[in-house]
Image (cartoon, rainbow, N blue to C red; front, side, top):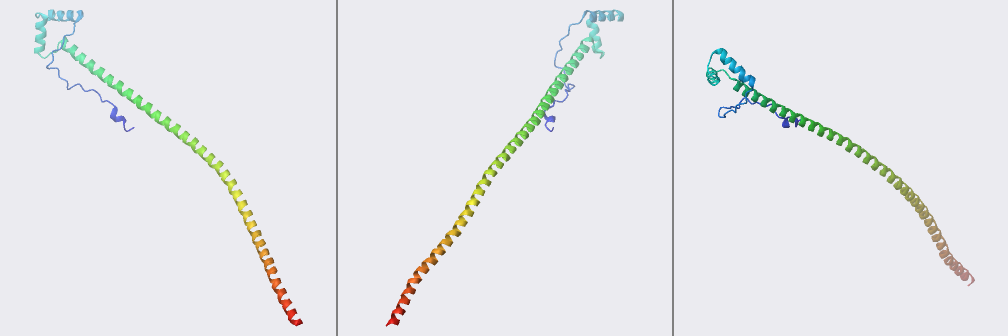
Length: 185
């Protein structure tokens, strides 16, 4: 991923480290090394071992002391590089673990969302059935109200007609009676 480059360590470059100001601690020489030096000194016909070492240092040759120091530095470099590689491997494992965790979490959230959505649609269907039943009842009641309204209008019209007939007949009777009375006179 993009972040991976930010947390990986680079290789150790210890070539810039100088040991001029430091006094190297002499490593203990083994018997074989001492015997080897003594036999070389005897073969070369030179003086004591310390004089021979000083001579080799002046001539630019490194003695066993410096070669063991160089090998110690190399060992330290290798160990430091191994530690960095171990840290990088550990970080890569952590990164892989987090990536797997993220992917797993995405899958679980997706599954949970689908279940929630499915449950939501089930509730919608249930509520739709209830609403549909209520709308059906409402439609039936409105149709019944409309029918009763029509019947009421018919009854009102009938009552109005009857009332008019009742009101008109007495007047008609009084006119007939008056004409009849006038005819008698």
